[in-house]
Length: 174
Image (cartoon, rainbow, N blue to C red; front, side, top):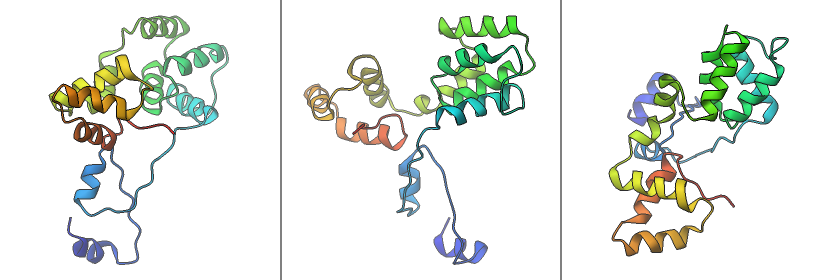
């Protein structure tokens, strides 16, 4: 949307917050100020899960240990917490145990898998291969070493890594 049109529609002194997993989309529209959202703290993540599983900020009586197991199974990831919490809503303890067993064996509900793989699906072939290399073999390795490996294979690693970083699928931890 044109910046002048935005000013006419919402006003020149308005603050607009736009979210995206792809920084490239934002920069193409002239966004220059970015804020990377940090992960949730454990207590907030558990509350998010409970709000979807029980419609309460805390677990129902008898489900405390299952909430803890679910939190661990979701790795504290907000999207996973929301999807799996909603999936377990109004289900009995036996259903929860079965679901947690499946998650432990990586046999996830199709809806959960579809939501969690959206970011991966939009990658091109080289980006997918580099992403999988990082996930399976090179997690925690130095960026320069990885770039030498991929560049030596004829891949344009800098562009692929920047694309993965823009889509929030790769980042350098300092």
